[in-house]
Length: 120
Figure 1 (cartoon, rainbow, N blue to C red):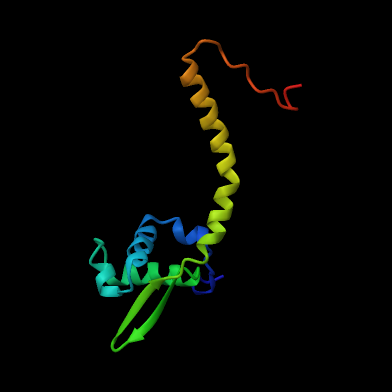
Figure 2 (cartoon, rainbow, N blue to C red; figure 1 turned 45 degrees about the vertical axis):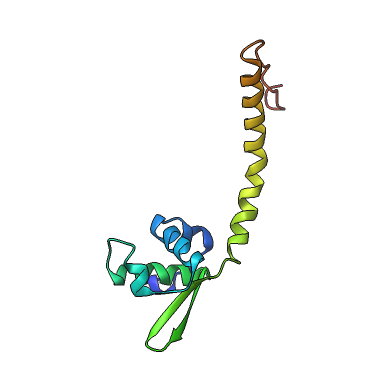
């Protein structure tokens, strides 16, 4: 498969810190590539590649205004990411509750480990 045939999803698109920063910038307002590039120590071509990946993941869209193309955030695909993360939120809530209990009791008694089916 050639690089031009690769389709990017939301997870691949946000994996790169530069692309996450581009999304943050575009969350504030529409911007042309020249304004986006001014926030990074890289070439316009490199930013164009990042915008291409974000566009393939449908996280940004562009529209022509005169000679410029303005890019804007399309947040709808981030819902998939939110759903995936919410699945793990319960895990972290349980861990934080346990930590709170330990801190509040300040070692008055040790917590017994939670036994699972695998432990039996």
